[in-house]
Length: 334
Image 1 (tube, rainbow, N blue to C red):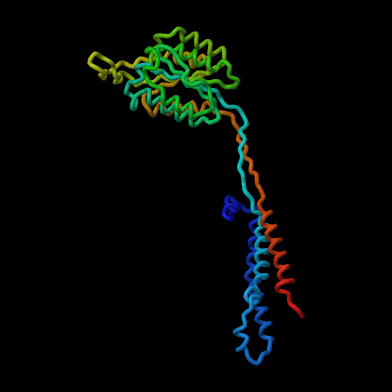
Image 2 (cartoon, helix red, strand yellow):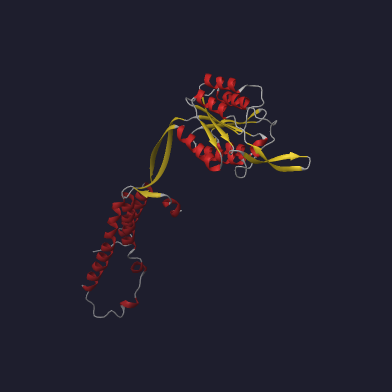
């Protein structure tokens, strides 16, 4: 119980502990006083007194010990034992961000390690972990688009949803317009002053019901900034392809509509990036992270709970008990 009381205790005035240096002096003074008193008593022989040992003689130092305990409690109380509680308050505005990720079959190409899709998922997870104050959502697209996770600040849920992304969840193809339009729709009712889409793809628009230019105009209408990322090496990339004999690796030509992606980024106030390997993809997300900083101020508060009251009561109890014993059990008669 005593250990629990002093657990996480700090002291507001620790200099008062210097007063403990007087306790050894008090003990020395008490012993010296008793020796002087004994030396003034003249007796012819102490042989008979040596066998006399009453309970008062045994416990005669109890009042002095109680006084030392009371003094120790008072010194500790003056040092102000207290428990410190830290509180933080966040003030400001975060950013609403949609990660729009291509999950078409070409995203399984292995010019990234282990492939484009897994590399994109890894950097997306790191990006989410580095934005604790923002609401983030996920939209995936291939031949059609789907909201994998709506805007949320629950980043544990986001990470879990990112890990579940895989090829084959949607009809194959590359519907850039549908993916962008669905992402804008997720941000349409947002009250955030800054709304951002990070659109990642490795192909050319060849499907969907919404033209990319139309989706771009919708983004401009709702003041959504779009960063676009073209993913794929230069030239050809080894890609797993289904054949009657099973899955075989073939070198497929990397075809990215960079003109379209640049136009979307320029028209919405964003920026276009090209990622040719894992390292460049990580740098791109880091750059976007620096470009889109949340304006959040964190104020720290320190709250203290005083813990000296039990020590004061203990000191008063020890003093009362000492006085009671001195004037009753250990009372000295003239």
